[in-house]
Image (cartoon, rainbow, N blue to C red; front, side, top):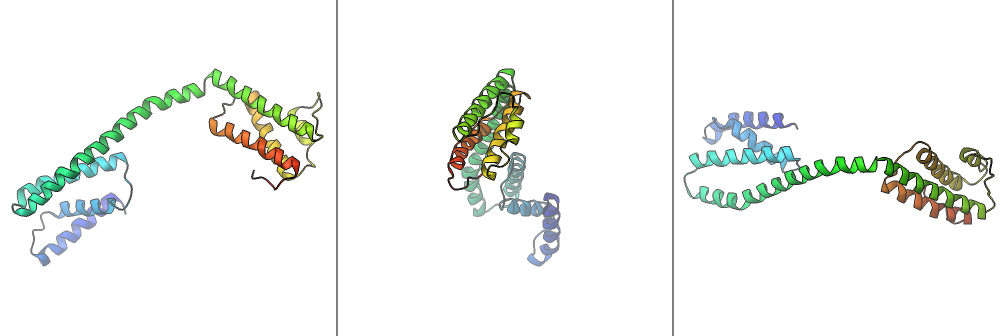
Length: 211
């Protein structure tokens, strides 16, 4: 249910039920906002929604100051003194975190996409590919000097599917990083390290590895 739908539904219900309970129907909009607040308790909120909910709650408190003049207002005031500082603190923390991420993330992207990052990625992929060739050579699959990475991959087409898939994955990464200057993120580097371990097990004839 959308926010506007909740407000309209709550307002209409309040307007229709007000005579039944002997209360004023002039607060229909406020009751619609109350229904919206209740529905928002059922799901996580983003920063904009939390700010809006805090403003609505402040408005309800202001109205309560004028219409609730008995002991109930004391209870509302005590709850406000406990909950409002926590809400403001949480909202402030989200704002600070958002500003910090806004400043830090572009700098991180620039750092990881810089020429030095591309060179480091190419070095990592070359080292990974070299270790892969050593593993294959120990099991009788020696790459010839005249063979390109793709040609060597084609020569392994009769190998088990697990071996072929792992070699193909590492070869593709090597080519795109070495010749296409693709930057490798840390998750991809860890994936390549796992692929080497899986390839060694597949060549030994261990249980089929997860690609």
